[in-house]
Image (cartoon, rainbow, N blue to C red; front, side, top):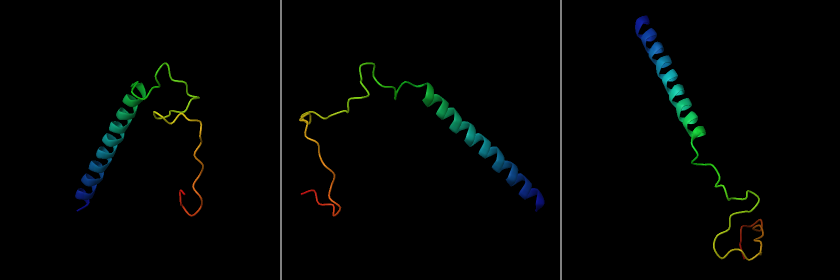
Length: 69
């Protein structure tokens, strides 16, 4: 019975190490990838606006009861 516990414990450690290694590999690949990099012409100070919503009107917060009217 003690042998089964030892084998299970070793298997659990091996699987955990493999899982951590896989996660580090994925994170490392995401860091080097330029998928989430900003475009060269984007100005981080300008908020992104949808078409037609450049009217300068700001939308206030909702009242505490949640009504938008």
